[in-house]
Image 1: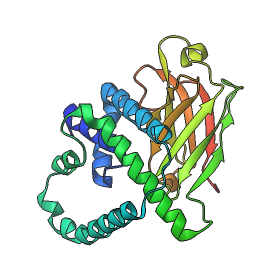
Image 2 (image 1 turned 90 degrees about the vertical axis):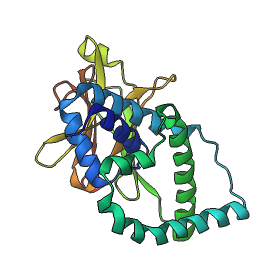
Image 3 (image 1 turned 120 degrees about the vertical axis):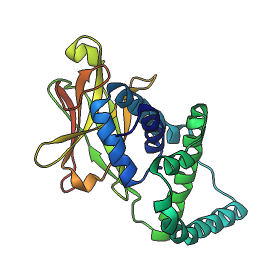
Length: 246
């Protein structure tokens, strides 16, 4: 088991995609039994999902492209060396090295990460011509929120997605009381894994960043849950997006 302090660091790393599989499993186990950390992880994910939208697209100069590509290749060459020494470094040291020590800088780091991801997508698209960098799946509104609509955008690797929706009433209007919209990754056997919380933007739209191996799941869904979230879905389902055959 990990502590709440360690979970805080890993949740921040998860929100910007800077976490390995082993650490993500440790975090998921902790979140299953910790309401406060689950809420915090959802807040990190919601904040990170909006950062790319706040960045103005820029055409990088030839000099910048050259420097970045040089850094990318250097990083790749260093991966083997890091893999050899990884066993000598504890998981929390690896996670801590990926995010700023001062949590106040987390959003700035995420913004920088989003900029790098955006540039990386430009490189991939440039190399592979017309091959799309992401896939879009239409979201189905459920009876609890019949006027909702939205989309799930899956990245090429199927390990990250952004869920957006409009026409959703506040969760308290659907179920009453102090409630939230929680996002789930659902397997074919109907077991559900808590993935994120939908967060509302000033324009009334909702969004969440969803991390996980999408190929291992059949559905992404959102339900109304008590404040802080639930370990498993308990409230009305408002949105659903099928992953099978997407």
